[in-house]
Image 1 (cartoon, one colour):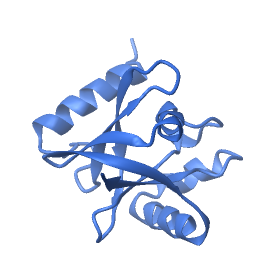
Image 2 (cartoon, one colour):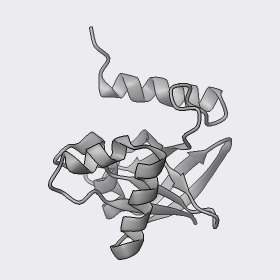
Image 3 (cartoon, helix red, strand yellow):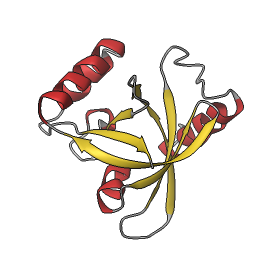
Image 4 (tube, one colour):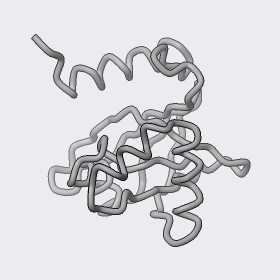
Length: 138
């Protein structure tokens, strides 16, 4: 029987936490664990995500949902409540989320495609413009 996405996420989060933020399937890619508050339910939800750090300490995440035609739940949650808990490496901190727009969004997405070419396919697979979100320490 195939694993559900929830099972894959749970296993990935466990590995992330056990290995100081490293995921064996993608050892050279930075990951984070994002905990948001449900927009409707108020329930805390935790998701592992690849990220793109910048030199100022901001972590950028991409609402690709593997090229699906709908946004991931975590994006809806951040739009309703931009405060989140972030685990990055061995650190845990509170962050404020803000969607990135315009040329900076395009530049960040292009950098992510360069780092992980699969992201080009994600954008090609959907008509929606995949949002980019900046996470900054609160």
